[in-house]
Length: 245
Image (cartoon, rainbow, N blue to C red; front, side, top):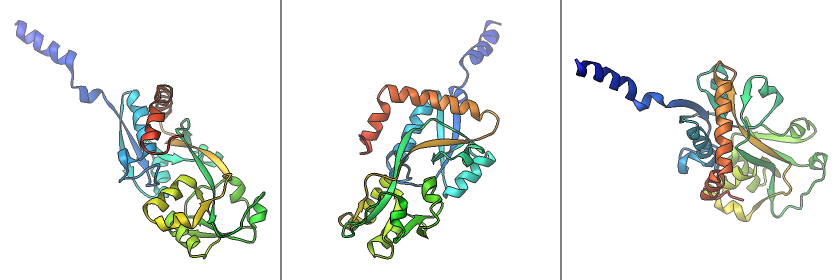
């Protein structure tokens, strides 16, 4: 009789540990050096997010897809959240935003042999400017209808066009374009340069669909992020990925 009492009690108290861990599903798109399937720990942004959730008892699953599908799937609730995302008022109506986990410098690349400078965007009116499909640009640039904007699918194509003098400027994220040059177009490092200061420095966030329970996920992520910022984990990750300050 003792055995029949103790065995169920033991099972009740121990319980399988795997069931206790919560899982968060994230949709993202390759955007080196922030995110990439071939990068160490899927890129520094992915590692920061994983560590923040881990501190709060979550494990993270990642799915890679094109940028527009990330937004669609997260809005539909197929995935809990997507990243990396810039803040916009229009998006904030559809998504919960996390605290920022990293920053992005957005500005212009030019050829080193071109003497191009600007004080306001109107100074860039004479030039053909490359833009990426689906990239969220600063509102000031979006509203500049007087500028000549030429669309290409991605960073590498725009950088090639700039090197080949088919465009005169390319607006993009500084780190992403630098990664593309390092990995795919090393010859471009001697030809192209980023124009300081950047047009805008923007925060990167997770976006969560406005579905039941996700407001608690946002709070848990923010709490975990604060922990890893305070204890130096974020600085260590940035240094390991070669993007530390």
